[in-house]
Amino acid sequence: ATGGAADRYGAKMWMVGSAMGAQKLGYNVTSVAPGKRAFPFHNHRINEEMFLILKGTGEIRIGSESHPVKQHDLIACPPGGEESAHQIINTGDSELAYLAVSTRFSPEIANYPDSGKFAVLADYPADQEGEAQRFSFVGREKTGLDYWEGE
Image (cartoon, rainbow, N blue to C red; front, side, top):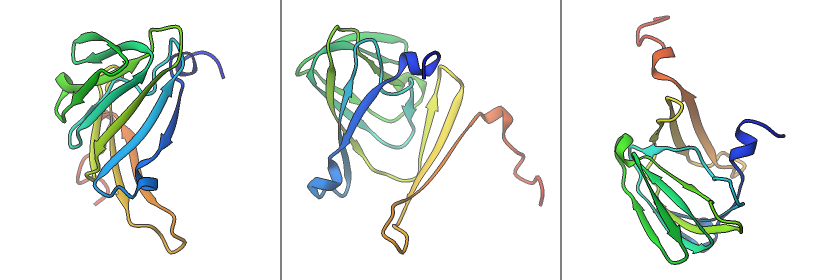
Protein backbone atom coordinates (compact mmCIF):
# COMPACT_ATOMS: atom_id res chain seq x y z
CA ALA A 1 0.00 0.00 0.00
CA THR A 2 1.10 3.56 -0.62
CA GLY A 3 0.01 6.86 0.82
CA GLY A 4 -0.65 7.88 4.40
CA ALA A 5 0.97 5.73 7.06
CA ALA A 6 2.56 3.39 4.48
CA ASP A 7 4.74 6.27 3.29
CA ARG A 8 5.96 7.15 6.80
CA TYR A 9 6.22 3.82 8.63
CA GLY A 10 8.19 0.71 7.83
CA ALA A 11 10.17 -1.51 10.15
CA LYS A 12 11.20 -5.11 10.66
CA MET A 13 11.30 -6.39 14.22
CA TRP A 14 12.92 -9.44 15.73
CA MET A 15 11.44 -10.28 19.13
CA VAL A 16 14.48 -11.84 20.78
CA GLY A 17 13.57 -11.59 24.49
CA SER A 18 11.53 -14.76 24.92
CA ALA A 19 13.99 -16.72 22.75
CA MET A 20 16.71 -15.72 25.23
CA GLY A 21 14.54 -16.73 28.19
CA ALA A 22 13.79 -13.16 29.34
CA GLN A 23 10.90 -12.86 31.77
CA LYS A 24 10.76 -9.32 33.15
CA LEU A 25 12.25 -7.34 30.27
CA GLY A 26 11.28 -7.25 26.60
CA TYR A 27 14.02 -7.18 23.95
CA ASN A 28 13.75 -6.65 20.23
CA VAL A 29 15.97 -5.58 17.37
CA THR A 30 14.25 -3.13 15.04
CA SER A 31 15.41 -2.22 11.53
CA VAL A 32 14.02 0.93 9.89
CA ALA A 33 14.38 1.84 6.20
CA PRO A 34 15.62 5.31 5.15
CA GLY A 35 12.98 7.99 5.57
CA LYS A 36 10.77 5.75 7.73
CA ARG A 37 9.94 5.27 11.38
CA ALA A 38 8.84 2.15 13.24
CA PHE A 39 6.05 3.60 15.39
CA PRO A 40 3.99 6.76 15.83
CA PHE A 41 5.16 9.39 18.34
CA HIS A 42 4.02 7.93 21.68
CA ASN A 43 4.59 7.81 25.43
CA HIS A 44 4.14 5.00 27.91
CA ARG A 45 2.40 5.64 31.23
CA ILE A 46 3.73 2.44 32.84
CA ASN A 47 6.73 0.96 31.02
CA GLU A 48 10.23 2.30 30.50
CA GLU A 49 12.21 1.79 27.28
CA MET A 50 15.87 1.99 26.37
CA PHE A 51 17.33 2.07 22.86
CA LEU A 52 20.87 1.31 21.69
CA ILE A 53 21.56 2.40 18.12
CA LEU A 54 23.34 -0.50 16.40
CA LYS A 55 23.88 1.08 12.98
CA GLY A 56 22.79 3.99 10.86
CA THR A 57 21.82 7.57 11.63
CA GLY A 58 18.58 9.32 12.39
CA GLU A 59 16.86 11.40 14.99
CA ILE A 60 14.77 10.85 18.05
CA ARG A 61 11.88 13.07 18.99
CA ILE A 62 11.44 13.34 22.75
CA GLY A 63 8.69 15.64 23.91
CA SER A 64 8.99 18.90 21.99
CA GLU A 65 12.65 18.38 20.99
CA SER A 66 14.53 16.37 18.35
CA HIS A 67 18.07 15.03 18.70
CA PRO A 68 20.39 13.35 16.17
CA VAL A 69 21.26 9.68 16.82
CA LYS A 70 24.08 7.49 15.49
CA GLN A 71 25.71 4.12 16.11
CA HIS A 72 26.40 3.39 19.81
CA ASP A 73 24.07 6.12 21.12
CA LEU A 74 22.09 5.00 24.17
CA ILE A 75 18.67 6.54 24.84
CA ALA A 76 16.46 6.24 27.94
CA CYS A 77 12.71 6.80 27.63
CA PRO A 78 11.11 6.69 31.11
CA PRO A 79 7.35 6.45 31.56
CA GLY A 80 5.40 9.67 31.84
CA GLY A 81 3.18 12.11 30.02
CA GLU A 82 3.51 13.91 26.71
CA GLU A 83 6.93 15.26 27.74
CA SER A 84 8.26 11.68 27.54
CA ALA A 85 6.71 10.88 24.13
CA HIS A 86 9.31 9.52 21.72
CA GLN A 87 9.86 8.38 18.14
CA ILE A 88 12.97 7.25 16.28
CA ILE A 89 13.17 8.35 12.63
CA ASN A 90 15.68 7.14 10.05
CA THR A 91 16.92 10.37 8.45
CA GLY A 92 19.95 8.68 6.85
CA ASP A 93 20.36 7.02 3.48
CA SER A 94 20.86 3.47 4.78
CA GLU A 95 19.21 1.12 7.27
CA LEU A 96 18.90 2.28 10.90
CA ALA A 97 18.89 -0.58 13.42
CA TYR A 98 18.51 -0.49 17.18
CA LEU A 99 18.13 -2.74 20.18
CA ALA A 100 15.04 -1.90 22.23
CA VAL A 101 14.75 -3.02 25.85
CA SER A 102 11.66 -2.39 27.95
CA THR A 103 10.00 -3.32 31.19
CA ARG A 104 7.01 -5.60 30.69
CA PHE A 105 4.40 -4.35 33.13
CA SER A 106 0.82 -5.12 32.14
CA PRO A 107 -1.59 -3.47 31.66
CA GLU A 108 -0.03 -0.53 29.85
CA ILE A 109 -1.49 2.77 28.70
CA ALA A 110 0.14 4.56 25.76
CA ASN A 111 -0.70 8.01 24.42
CA TYR A 112 -0.16 9.28 20.87
CA PRO A 113 0.14 13.09 21.07
CA ASP A 114 0.24 13.67 17.29
CA SER A 115 -3.14 12.01 16.71
CA GLY A 116 -4.82 12.42 20.11
CA LYS A 117 -5.24 8.64 20.55
CA PHE A 118 -4.58 6.36 23.49
CA ALA A 119 -4.15 2.61 23.75
CA VAL A 120 -4.82 0.19 26.58
CA LEU A 121 -2.72 -2.95 26.22
CA ALA A 122 -2.73 -6.03 28.45
CA ASP A 123 -1.05 -9.42 28.20
CA TYR A 124 -2.83 -12.48 29.61
CA PRO A 125 -1.60 -16.00 30.27
CA ALA A 126 -1.49 -18.33 27.26
CA ASP A 127 -4.69 -20.13 26.25
CA GLN A 128 -5.13 -23.93 26.29
CA GLU A 129 -3.23 -24.23 23.00
CA GLY A 130 -0.31 -22.21 24.37
CA GLU A 131 -1.11 -19.09 22.31
CA ALA A 132 -0.37 -15.74 23.94
CA GLN A 133 -3.45 -13.70 24.75
CA ARG A 134 -3.50 -9.93 24.39
CA PHE A 135 -6.10 -7.22 24.90
CA SER A 136 -5.67 -4.06 22.88
CA PHE A 137 -8.00 -1.07 22.63
CA VAL A 138 -7.19 2.12 20.73
CA GLY A 139 -9.47 5.12 21.02
CA ARG A 140 -9.87 8.77 21.82
CA GLU A 141 -10.93 9.92 25.26
CA LYS A 142 -13.59 12.30 23.95
CA THR A 143 -15.38 9.49 22.10
CA GLY A 144 -15.48 7.08 25.07
CA LEU A 145 -18.58 5.90 26.86
CA ASP A 146 -19.90 7.09 30.19
CA TYR A 147 -19.10 4.64 32.99
CA TRP A 148 -22.81 4.05 33.71
CA GLU A 149 -24.00 3.79 30.11
CA GLY A 150 -26.03 0.62 29.54
CA GLU A 151 -26.10 -0.32 33.22
